[in-house]
Image (cartoon, rainbow, N blue to C red; front, side):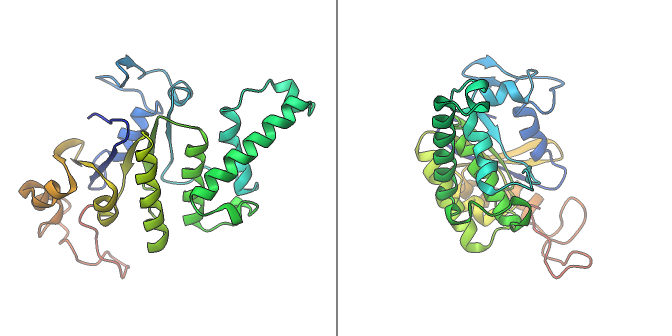
Length: 251
């Protein structure tokens, strides 16, 4: 699989197909048993997440990883601080250069939150914010890192329809600035709206790849994910046990 600058590349598939594993491998959280991950032709696999992130490949998580007792602004400033060169001593002792760096980080974090419509909520405590807002804060934090590539693990989960639409517009705007986006997502309508390319996985294997329109017309995709029976033997569209919600054909 190849992710290009300025591309929104979605990875979809059934539960357990390996979607999040792909992100964990690309970001250095898992070690490969074979093959390699390359950035501009240079192998970056096996070096760990800090090494990968320092080269502009950043990620979000299925469950937001926030400092819950601090503000939304603080959580994004953590990332913004990494893009501003400032010696620890100047920051600790509040020297002029340290104060300037702190102001710059605050401005960058506020701008990132504003891009997601959260600037008016920036002083809200992260642990008290709705789950959908926490997800958006994670996306804002990736923006504050000034990345080359962003790996998003189900960013639309828990978002309202207007929030998802706004996120989709933002992702297209980010890609338009030359940043590559890898999007793992269950919401197929969201994928159709934002993705340039879709890779579909099943049981750890890539089974199809193409545009969203090509995925819709692919008979194998229809058989595996939109057909009468899923790989678990559950009729697509039937209700999940104890739920009013139907099974998602690509959940």
